[in-house]
Amino acid sequence: MKTFVTTAFAILLFLCVWTERRSTDGTINPIIGDISFEKKYGTVPDEHTDDQVRIAAHLEYVEMELRKRDVSNLSPEMRSKRAHLLDLLHNYRSAGLFPKNYKYPDRKPCFIDQDGTICAVGYLIEQTAGRVAAEDINSRFQYATIFEMKDENVDNWIAKSGLSKEECAMIQPTYTPVSAYKPEIKPAYAITSSVLMGLNGASSVINAVEVGRGSRTNATPVLGIVGGAGQFVAGAIGLNRKNQVDYASGTWYAGKTQRNVSMINMGLGSLSIGMGIWNLAVNNRPISRRSAWDVRSFPDANGKSGLALSFTHKF
Image (cartoon, one colour):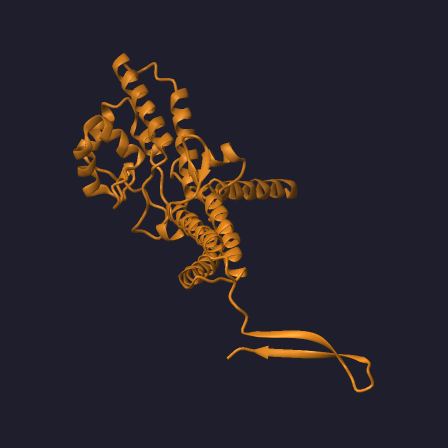
């Protein structure tokens, strides 16, 4: 009896853990959860995982799974339409442009977001039935799952697609709230850029003033050239720093904001270098020193030599 109770408890505990492990709450898809991410990366995604990476992994997994299914029961026409839709799904994933959840604080599907970006299933409908049909569905079911879309037009499209309603629901991702998105510029890069902009902006102004006066110090143009070179290099590196992903090639690129800041860095860096070189090339006369210190020798009363510190200042 004791052995039976222990075994039953162990099985119950295992089922509870397994159910929790496979819970689809808060996952990329309510039907298959995040198995796509686990299969591709060998780990479970968390709140720090890039949502765009999760979406791409999900669509890639679903496409492969649907292509492997036995569809011998379908007519040749339906098999052809199904294959065409899966090709469209592949193109959609490769483009890497996915909608965002601007409305809800938790993960939700989004048919077409406020920027006009369409979801995967919406894209399939758009490419086969037209954008007007997709926007009509969006006007009534923007944040609904496929199973929540109680609509004759949706059902008719699915019936003629070669896909089942469950398969369409498998394709449909959910999206994290926009507030959880990572910034398009890294904080460290933003701080570095701000410091360099201030430094090189000041040196460029000073170099311009010295060019206008026709005189210079050696430090100002050198500072402008060195600082400008550093800012230009920082801009060039930041332009391609890993921050967002191109899903077609798997290459990471900087976000739009970071790219804009990088272009500014390269421009201001070039300006600072140019002003420093101009100051060096045009002005060869150093600024006359109004104050000077010197050490001099002098004879004392006994005919011996002594040292004296002299200071002169021009008024």
